[in-house]
Length: 265
Ligand SMILES: NC(=O)c1ccc[n+]([C@@H]2O[C@H](COP(=O)([O-])OP(=O)(O)OC[C@H]3O[C@@H](n4cnc5c(N)ncnc54)[C@H](O)[C@@H]3O)[C@@H](O)[C@H]2O)c1
Image (cartoon, rainbow, N blue to C red; front, side, top):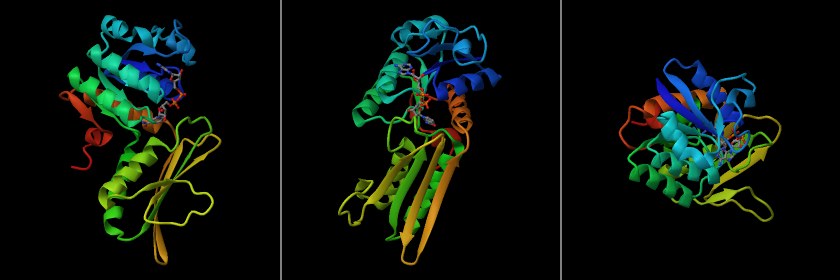
């Protein structure tokens, strides 16, 4: 049995991931961390009835990981918290799955260093849905074949999402730019804003949309749209729990969800 802990345990994603861990035959919940509901049974906190695992203060993470025999930590929190949680989990010798988005370069460097210095393995991905990882592969192919086309990315998310643009949209822009090279990113447009050679990125927020991403390639007299729509957070939670099982069998290092799925080889 793989012993997995969840940070951000009482959030939208954390709640679903805990339910997926309980449904898995090869994994059990070893600990839960959140800044809300500390000391409560996590099941009571997420409306699943008593689960016999408490919500711990993230400040005690290293001790709790060791005492509970946690082997892998799954983190869906916010970037500032996640960057610290990864250092704590790595120094306690746990492998990791990081789904949090909105990291800056310094936070990414700090996490990579902690993972490498402590010889643990981690999967870091702004999107754990299988379909989104295939969507990124399709974008690579389209960008390579649509010479001279204008590229615009639009994402739509629920009104509680904190970061913008989404990590998935940022990764879509990177994937396309890896093929096209050197394109500037323009985030929304206002005033005199004539189009150049940029990749336009637009974030729309409202209601309870789980996550839509559309990439538009515009040519003369035609356009192609590549779109992914998440109908349920279960697509992300399922992928994250799959990645937690996979990372336990890997040598130390930092991986993406494409590695878990064997894509892009
Ligand atoms: N990679 C993916 O597939 C994917 C999918 C969906 C969401 N996300 C990302 O996951 C993150 C969480 O999303 P959500 O919708 O569940 O948010 P949420 O706000 O519902 O949940 C976040 C939880 O983290 C807790 N938290 C805050 N600081 C903490 C800390 N220091 N230690 C432990 N817990 C802490 C909060 O109390 C909250 O319960 C966001 O960055 C979001 O963009 C990623």
